[in-house]
Image (cartoon, one colour):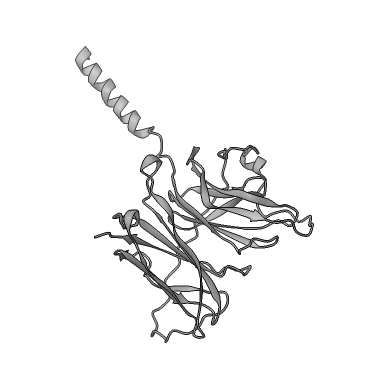
Length: 280
């Protein structure tokens, strides 16, 4: 074998090896929000929703307040976790932080835009729901740190669609359910958002709308459009809007996450959809 042929063989082998052993892409957290009564009290339920790279292990925690809690992947790239506010601790402007990782690669931890404050309450020895930070490799420190190992998450098997039935007239729902009827999940909206749905008759629900362009670093554009309580009528109908999408909110391709839940109940019955903005 002459020297030119040997060099070609080595180059081909190096190229193949580079493709096979290339490092997997780094996971990314797009957004993290949570639902909780206002004000938050001991024993209340906090529901956390996080969006990021699909198929990863996910968790969240509140510094020096709630130990790290594993999250379940509800659908591709959408994670949810629940924790109970402990009765033996207080918190003032405590940050809630989300973590995402897979195969040894970790996304930079992301903090929710809202902070958690819980006043002193009756003493109770019952621990908060979650896994000890030491198990996940998170040290208590003033800075946000990344767990060495996140809890394993197994995706649920696909659910077979129910047989189609004749649509029924809209009526009020039971107290453990909320349905967003407008806009439709995955639809494209232009310049305005109007949120409508069904809940328990004469109940109060909170509507939260956040946005993200799913980028990171200096190119990241994310925030909250609104967080407001709305009253359902005696038929259970609620509505808010139209909400104008001006300025940065009119950027093409923004993803808007709409979340509706009962703010003052242990079971928030959170309903969540996502739509895409078209500023034209």
